[in-house]
Each structure stands twice: as C-alpha cells, then as structure tokens.
Image (tube, rainbow, N blue to C red; front, side, top):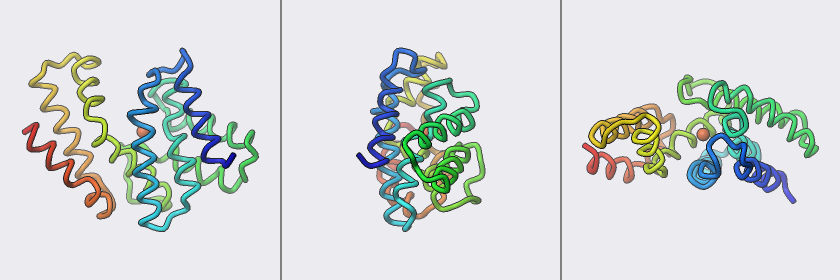
Length: 185
Ligand SMILES: [Fe+2]
C-alpha cells in the first residue's frame, strides 16, 4: 500500500476511536474535502503531490488525538512517529512536519514552501464545503441564536475568502462564496 493510503487509513482509524475528540465527523466533513482541494492545488501549482497529501491527511491529527489547543505542534509529533514507523524518508518527514506546524489560519500564509502554503490554503477552502459544520459550531458549541449564527458564519467565510493566497483557489471557490453571500447577507 502506498504511503498516502497508509496515512489516510491511520487517520480514519484515529477518528473512529471512542477517544477521538470530535468523533468521526471530521473525517467525512473536514479531512476529505480538505484533501480534495489540496490535491487540486498541488496539481495546478506543480507542488510535491505526495508530501501535500500526506501532510493534508495528517494536518489535524493533533486535534483528533489531543484536542484543538496547540494541535499544530502535537500533530507534528504524532506525524513524525507514525511516518517513521511507515519507513517514510527523513527528508520528506521534515517537509510534512513543516506543513503541519504552519497550517493554522491565524498565521501569515505568505512565507514557507509551496507545499506549506497549499496545506494552509486547502484547510481554509474546506470551510466552503462544510457550512453545516460551521453552523453547528455557532449554534451548538457557541450557543448563538439563528440570527447571530448567520452573521458569524458569513463573517467567518468572508475572513477565509480574504486570506486566500492563490488566484487558483479563488477561482475554485468563487461560485460557492457568492452563493453563501446571497443566502446569508
Ligand atoms: Fe484542518
């Protein structure tokens, strides 16, 4: 089995465990769309596809295993151990670790390797495929009412849109972004 499939299987197993911090839902609703965008961007921008895919499957593993706080750092440790178990080359492990460490949206996405930028960008793009998840966070976890939740979902999507780094990403997502604005404004 190739490394991408091994890593995907590992992440899916972690999401299925009863100890998974957010249950199985992130696998379907976050990881899968996120990896899809990462793959498209890697192809269009000529990045190292394998590094991008391995890092994309693993980017939130720290959050699944330990919770959201510092998950870019906890995830890096888990990824390193697991990839070494799989016999993945050390130089590639380093590239994957950098992608995981620097994927968080709160960080500046103008520095780093192309692969790092793609992982961070795909993470932002995946929000546009998970509007029910963003509503769930606002209504259930943050206890907002419907009106407030509508505002907060729209402002989150606007923030993600403004921070997109590649024109290729904006092209991919523009119809969805415009549809959300129409529905939520
Ligand atoms: Fe993510």
